[in-house]
Image (spheres, rainbow, N blue to C red):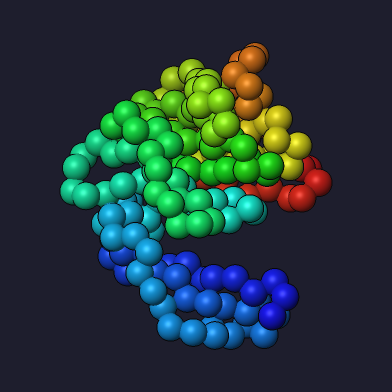
Length: 188
């Protein structure tokens, strides 16, 4: 029906998709494997992937290597390297318009920074440089700012910064162990 799509889930490192109708909350077919190498930071965390509103899927490869590459799978099912240089990536999040990808690179518990990659121009901008580990990027609805957490430093907490890398990150809340996951539609 109208609005039907797929429910995507992981079983170990394999990603499966099953036809799903959100209007009736029912599965309408059989699951099919679409990827077999989706990585996660640890065995207890889910795989690291994101899907944009236009159907583009981005994920971290996980063929057992410590360093990983970022790949994307378009709506036609074509797999392409998006950020092929191996690194310690995680926290993949598409911008609201689906044209940019925010992600962490570095040790997520010690000294990670956040980056934004423009998918169309393939340009890369570092958006954090605060001490400690910047993690869990969440885009503001305007696509101009990113909310994120920082730990492993005396001023750990919740921060925000410009998505174009200009200016310095600003702290919103001082609290150890905080990890944002979403923001209200109006950005407040």
